[in-house]
Length: 330
Image (cartoon, rainbow, N blue to C red):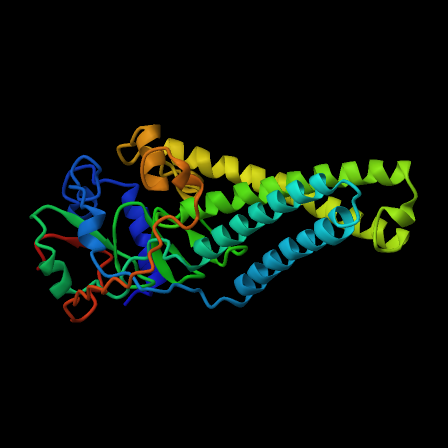
Protein backbone atom coordinates (compact mmCIF):
# COMPACT_ATOMS: atom_id res chain seq x y z
CA UNK A 1 0.00 0.00 0.00
CA UNK A 2 1.28 3.44 -0.90
CA UNK A 3 1.94 6.00 1.77
CA UNK A 4 -0.21 9.19 1.89
CA UNK A 5 2.72 11.18 0.50
CA UNK A 6 3.07 8.94 -2.54
CA UNK A 7 -0.69 8.89 -3.08
CA UNK A 8 -0.74 12.69 -2.95
CA UNK A 9 2.01 12.89 -5.56
CA UNK A 10 0.14 10.43 -7.77
CA UNK A 11 -2.98 12.62 -7.58
CA UNK A 12 -1.07 15.77 -8.56
CA UNK A 13 0.59 13.87 -11.42
CA UNK A 14 -2.72 12.51 -12.64
CA UNK A 15 -4.30 15.97 -12.70
CA UNK A 16 -1.86 17.11 -15.31
CA UNK A 17 -2.30 14.15 -17.65
CA UNK A 18 -5.06 12.60 -19.70
CA UNK A 19 -5.32 9.28 -21.42
CA UNK A 20 -4.56 9.65 -25.14
CA UNK A 21 -6.90 6.85 -26.19
CA UNK A 22 -9.63 7.55 -23.71
CA UNK A 23 -9.12 4.29 -21.83
CA UNK A 24 -7.60 5.86 -18.76
CA UNK A 25 -10.73 5.98 -16.64
CA UNK A 26 -9.23 7.72 -13.61
CA UNK A 27 -7.50 10.50 -15.50
CA UNK A 28 -10.48 11.19 -17.75
CA UNK A 29 -12.47 12.14 -14.68
CA UNK A 30 -9.99 14.90 -13.87
CA UNK A 31 -10.56 16.91 -17.04
CA UNK A 32 -12.09 20.30 -16.08
CA UNK A 33 -14.74 20.12 -18.79
CA UNK A 34 -15.90 16.69 -17.56
CA UNK A 35 -15.82 17.35 -13.84
CA UNK A 36 -19.06 18.60 -12.33
CA UNK A 37 -18.21 21.18 -9.65
CA UNK A 38 -19.46 20.51 -6.14
CA UNK A 39 -20.62 23.35 -3.95
CA UNK A 40 -18.38 24.01 -0.95
CA UNK A 41 -21.52 24.56 1.10
CA UNK A 42 -22.51 20.95 0.49
CA UNK A 43 -19.19 19.50 1.56
CA UNK A 44 -18.54 21.83 4.49
CA UNK A 45 -22.00 21.94 6.03
CA UNK A 46 -21.14 21.71 9.70
CA UNK A 47 -21.28 23.77 12.88
CA UNK A 48 -18.14 25.83 13.38
CA UNK A 49 -16.57 25.78 16.85
CA UNK A 50 -17.27 28.75 19.12
CA UNK A 51 -13.55 29.27 19.78
CA UNK A 52 -10.64 28.74 17.40
CA UNK A 53 -7.04 28.81 18.54
CA UNK A 54 -3.95 27.17 17.04
CA UNK A 55 -1.57 25.68 19.62
CA UNK A 56 1.65 26.45 17.75
CA UNK A 57 4.63 27.60 19.84
CA UNK A 58 6.14 29.76 17.08
CA UNK A 59 2.80 31.39 16.30
CA UNK A 60 2.01 32.10 19.95
CA UNK A 61 5.44 33.71 20.44
CA UNK A 62 4.99 35.86 17.32
CA UNK A 63 1.50 36.92 18.43
CA UNK A 64 2.80 37.92 21.88
CA UNK A 65 5.67 39.86 20.28
CA UNK A 66 3.15 41.70 18.10
CA UNK A 67 1.19 42.87 21.14
CA UNK A 68 4.37 43.84 23.02
CA UNK A 69 5.57 45.95 20.08
CA UNK A 70 2.25 47.79 19.96
CA UNK A 71 2.42 48.38 23.72
CA UNK A 72 6.00 49.65 23.40
CA UNK A 73 4.97 52.10 20.70
CA UNK A 74 2.06 53.31 22.84
CA UNK A 75 4.39 53.74 25.83
CA UNK A 76 6.91 55.86 23.90
CA UNK A 77 4.22 57.93 22.22
CA UNK A 78 2.43 58.62 25.49
CA UNK A 79 5.20 59.01 28.07
CA UNK A 80 8.10 60.26 25.92
CA UNK A 81 6.39 62.51 23.38
CA UNK A 82 2.85 63.52 24.35
CA UNK A 83 2.78 63.96 28.13
CA UNK A 84 5.87 66.23 28.24
CA UNK A 85 4.56 68.31 25.31
CA UNK A 86 3.64 71.91 26.11
CA UNK A 87 0.72 72.01 23.68
CA UNK A 88 -2.20 70.32 25.48
CA UNK A 89 -4.44 70.23 22.39
CA UNK A 90 -1.69 68.53 20.37
CA UNK A 91 -1.23 65.90 23.09
CA UNK A 92 -4.94 65.15 23.51
CA UNK A 93 -5.74 64.85 19.79
CA UNK A 94 -2.73 62.69 18.93
CA UNK A 95 -3.08 60.60 22.09
CA UNK A 96 -6.72 59.78 21.40
CA UNK A 97 -6.06 59.07 17.71
CA UNK A 98 -3.03 56.84 18.29
CA UNK A 99 -4.61 54.83 21.10
CA UNK A 100 -7.87 54.42 19.15
CA UNK A 101 -6.01 53.06 16.10
CA UNK A 102 -3.90 50.82 18.35
CA UNK A 103 -7.06 49.42 19.95
CA UNK A 104 -8.56 48.66 16.53
CA UNK A 105 -5.28 47.03 15.41
CA UNK A 106 -5.18 44.72 18.44
CA UNK A 107 -8.89 43.94 18.12
CA UNK A 108 -8.39 43.03 14.45
CA UNK A 109 -5.40 40.89 15.40
CA UNK A 110 -7.48 39.06 18.01
CA UNK A 111 -10.34 38.44 15.56
CA UNK A 112 -7.92 37.21 12.87
CA UNK A 113 -6.27 34.87 15.37
CA UNK A 114 -9.40 33.46 17.04
CA UNK A 115 -11.70 33.17 14.00
CA UNK A 116 -12.04 29.87 12.16
CA UNK A 117 -10.44 30.69 8.76
CA UNK A 118 -12.66 28.17 6.98
CA UNK A 119 -11.54 24.75 8.18
CA UNK A 120 -13.00 21.72 6.44
CA UNK A 121 -14.42 19.03 8.76
CA UNK A 122 -11.74 16.51 9.64
CA UNK A 123 -12.05 12.78 8.88
CA UNK A 124 -15.29 12.94 6.87
CA UNK A 125 -13.97 11.00 3.85
CA UNK A 126 -16.20 8.02 4.57
CA UNK A 127 -18.57 6.14 2.28
CA UNK A 128 -21.49 6.90 4.59
CA UNK A 129 -20.81 10.65 4.60
CA UNK A 130 -20.32 10.89 0.83
CA UNK A 131 -23.57 9.00 0.25
CA UNK A 132 -25.35 11.42 2.60
CA UNK A 133 -24.33 14.33 0.30
CA UNK A 134 -26.61 12.89 -2.40
CA UNK A 135 -24.22 13.74 -5.23
CA UNK A 136 -25.07 13.05 -8.85
CA UNK A 137 -23.42 10.27 -10.90
CA UNK A 138 -20.33 11.53 -12.73
CA UNK A 139 -19.26 13.91 -10.01
CA UNK A 140 -15.77 13.56 -8.57
CA UNK A 141 -14.60 14.54 -5.10
CA UNK A 142 -11.06 14.65 -3.75
CA UNK A 143 -9.83 13.45 -0.38
CA UNK A 144 -6.96 15.08 1.49
CA UNK A 145 -4.55 12.25 2.41
CA UNK A 146 -3.27 14.21 5.41
CA UNK A 147 -6.44 15.09 7.32
CA UNK A 148 -8.75 12.57 5.58
CA UNK A 149 -11.34 15.18 4.67
CA UNK A 150 -13.35 15.77 1.53
CA UNK A 151 -11.76 18.84 -0.07
CA UNK A 152 -14.04 21.44 -1.65
CA UNK A 153 -12.76 23.48 -4.57
CA UNK A 154 -10.02 25.99 -3.72
CA UNK A 155 -9.23 24.38 -0.36
CA UNK A 156 -5.61 23.66 0.64
CA UNK A 157 -4.05 21.79 3.53
CA UNK A 158 -2.11 23.76 6.14
CA UNK A 159 0.66 21.81 7.84
CA UNK A 160 0.58 24.10 10.89
CA UNK A 161 -3.19 24.13 11.46
CA UNK A 162 -3.32 20.47 10.35
CA UNK A 163 -6.57 21.18 8.51
CA UNK A 164 -7.75 21.92 5.01
CA UNK A 165 -8.70 25.61 4.76
CA UNK A 166 -11.18 27.05 2.27
CA UNK A 167 -9.63 29.77 0.07
CA UNK A 168 -6.42 29.62 2.07
CA UNK A 169 -4.13 32.53 1.22
CA UNK A 170 -1.23 31.73 3.56
CA UNK A 171 -0.42 30.84 7.15
CA UNK A 172 0.69 33.93 9.06
CA UNK A 173 2.70 33.30 12.26
CA UNK A 174 2.09 36.91 13.39
CA UNK A 175 -1.61 36.15 13.85
CA UNK A 176 -0.98 32.47 14.67
CA UNK A 177 -3.55 31.39 12.12
CA UNK A 178 -4.24 30.80 8.47
CA UNK A 179 -5.67 33.63 6.41
CA UNK A 180 -8.69 32.11 4.74
CA UNK A 181 -12.25 32.63 3.68
CA UNK A 182 -13.68 33.59 7.09
CA UNK A 183 -10.94 35.80 8.61
CA UNK A 184 -9.35 37.58 5.65
CA UNK A 185 -11.26 40.77 6.50
CA UNK A 186 -9.74 40.90 9.98
CA UNK A 187 -6.24 40.28 8.62
CA UNK A 188 -6.68 43.12 6.12
CA UNK A 189 -7.87 45.43 8.92
CA UNK A 190 -4.94 44.36 11.11
CA UNK A 191 -2.38 45.26 8.43
CA UNK A 192 -4.18 48.54 7.66
CA UNK A 193 -4.32 49.73 11.29
CA UNK A 194 -0.72 48.69 12.00
CA UNK A 195 0.38 50.66 8.93
CA UNK A 196 -1.61 53.70 10.12
CA UNK A 197 -0.23 53.70 13.67
CA UNK A 198 3.30 53.18 12.28
CA UNK A 199 2.90 56.19 10.00
CA UNK A 200 1.38 58.24 12.82
CA UNK A 201 4.24 57.33 15.19
CA UNK A 202 6.88 58.25 12.57
CA UNK A 203 5.28 61.65 12.00
CA UNK A 204 5.20 62.35 15.74
CA UNK A 205 8.84 61.25 16.12
CA UNK A 206 9.90 63.72 13.42
CA UNK A 207 7.99 66.59 15.08
CA UNK A 208 9.39 65.64 18.49
CA UNK A 209 12.96 65.63 17.22
CA UNK A 210 12.46 69.07 15.67
CA UNK A 211 10.94 70.33 18.91
CA UNK A 212 13.82 68.95 21.00
CA UNK A 213 16.48 70.39 18.70
CA UNK A 214 14.98 73.85 19.10
CA UNK A 215 14.58 73.52 22.87
CA UNK A 216 16.56 72.01 25.72
CA UNK A 217 16.57 68.19 25.57
CA UNK A 218 16.07 67.97 29.32
CA UNK A 219 12.77 69.86 29.01
CA UNK A 220 11.25 67.97 26.06
CA UNK A 221 11.01 64.59 27.82
CA UNK A 222 10.59 63.20 31.31
CA UNK A 223 13.48 60.81 30.59
CA UNK A 224 17.17 61.65 30.33
CA UNK A 225 18.37 62.87 26.90
CA UNK A 226 20.29 59.62 26.10
CA UNK A 227 17.30 57.45 27.08
CA UNK A 228 14.96 59.67 25.08
CA UNK A 229 17.11 59.40 21.96
CA UNK A 230 17.38 55.61 22.26
CA UNK A 231 13.61 55.16 22.78
CA UNK A 232 12.80 57.41 19.82
CA UNK A 233 15.32 55.70 17.51
CA UNK A 234 13.91 52.27 18.40
CA UNK A 235 10.38 53.50 17.80
CA UNK A 236 11.44 55.05 14.49
CA UNK A 237 13.04 51.77 13.38
CA UNK A 238 9.99 49.77 14.46
CA UNK A 239 7.56 52.15 12.78
CA UNK A 240 9.47 52.24 9.50
CA UNK A 241 9.87 48.46 9.38
CA UNK A 242 6.23 47.68 10.07
CA UNK A 243 4.96 50.49 7.87
CA UNK A 244 6.70 48.94 4.86
CA UNK A 245 5.79 45.36 5.77
CA UNK A 246 2.12 45.90 6.58
CA UNK A 247 1.57 48.28 3.65
CA UNK A 248 2.83 45.61 1.25
CA UNK A 249 0.69 42.94 2.94
CA UNK A 250 -2.36 45.20 2.86
CA UNK A 251 -1.94 45.88 -0.85
CA UNK A 252 -1.35 42.20 -1.58
CA UNK A 253 -4.47 41.12 0.31
CA UNK A 254 -6.71 43.71 -1.34
CA UNK A 255 -5.34 42.70 -4.74
CA UNK A 256 -6.05 39.03 -3.96
CA UNK A 257 -9.63 39.84 -3.00
CA UNK A 258 -10.26 41.99 -6.08
CA UNK A 259 -8.78 39.42 -8.48
CA UNK A 260 -10.42 36.48 -6.67
CA UNK A 261 -7.05 34.71 -6.41
CA UNK A 262 -5.33 33.62 -3.22
CA UNK A 263 -1.59 33.75 -2.70
CA UNK A 264 -1.20 29.96 -2.64
CA UNK A 265 -3.22 29.64 -5.84
CA UNK A 266 -0.88 32.04 -7.65
CA UNK A 267 2.13 30.25 -6.18
CA UNK A 268 0.91 26.85 -7.43
CA UNK A 269 -0.28 28.20 -10.76
CA UNK A 270 -3.91 27.26 -10.12
CA UNK A 271 -5.41 30.52 -11.41
CA UNK A 272 -8.12 30.33 -14.04
CA UNK A 273 -9.62 27.02 -12.83
CA UNK A 274 -12.79 28.64 -11.53
CA UNK A 275 -15.24 31.31 -12.61
CA UNK A 276 -14.10 34.58 -11.06
CA UNK A 277 -16.54 37.01 -9.52
CA UNK A 278 -16.48 40.80 -10.14
CA UNK A 279 -14.36 43.02 -7.91
CA UNK A 280 -17.24 44.70 -6.12
CA UNK A 281 -18.90 41.40 -5.35
CA UNK A 282 -15.60 39.96 -4.17
CA UNK A 283 -15.08 42.90 -1.78
CA UNK A 284 -18.66 42.64 -0.49
CA UNK A 285 -18.20 38.92 0.10
CA UNK A 286 -14.89 39.37 1.94
CA UNK A 287 -16.05 42.30 4.09
CA UNK A 288 -19.58 41.10 4.76
CA UNK A 289 -21.86 43.43 2.85
CA UNK A 290 -21.99 46.62 0.78
CA UNK A 291 -19.54 49.47 1.34
CA UNK A 292 -20.07 50.98 4.79
CA UNK A 293 -18.22 51.80 8.01
CA UNK A 294 -18.64 48.16 9.06
CA UNK A 295 -15.86 47.33 6.60
CA UNK A 296 -13.43 49.03 9.00
CA UNK A 297 -15.03 47.57 12.12
CA UNK A 298 -13.34 44.44 13.52
CA UNK A 299 -16.33 43.91 15.85
CA UNK A 300 -18.91 43.57 13.07
CA UNK A 301 -20.70 40.26 13.36
CA UNK A 302 -20.19 39.96 17.11
CA UNK A 303 -23.26 39.57 19.28
CA UNK A 304 -23.75 39.43 23.04
CA UNK A 305 -26.60 36.97 22.59
CA UNK A 306 -25.71 33.30 22.81
CA UNK A 307 -26.82 31.58 19.63
CA UNK A 308 -27.45 27.87 20.20
CA UNK A 309 -25.00 25.79 18.17
CA UNK A 310 -26.59 23.49 15.62
CA UNK A 311 -24.85 20.15 15.84
CA UNK A 312 -24.79 18.21 12.60
CA UNK A 313 -23.93 14.55 13.00
CA UNK A 314 -21.51 13.29 10.35
CA UNK A 315 -22.19 9.64 9.47
CA UNK A 316 -19.38 7.50 10.86
CA UNK A 317 -17.56 4.87 8.88
CA UNK A 318 -14.21 3.72 7.58
CA UNK A 319 -12.05 6.27 5.75
CA UNK A 320 -11.92 5.66 1.99
CA UNK A 321 -8.34 5.02 0.83
CA UNK A 322 -8.67 6.53 -2.65
CA UNK A 323 -7.76 10.19 -3.04
CA UNK A 324 -9.98 10.55 -6.13
CA UNK A 325 -13.52 9.41 -5.42
CA UNK A 326 -15.99 8.91 -8.27
CA UNK A 327 -19.75 9.02 -7.85
CA UNK A 328 -21.45 6.54 -7.63
CA UNK A 329 -19.28 4.71 -5.12
CA UNK A 330 -18.40 1.13 -5.85
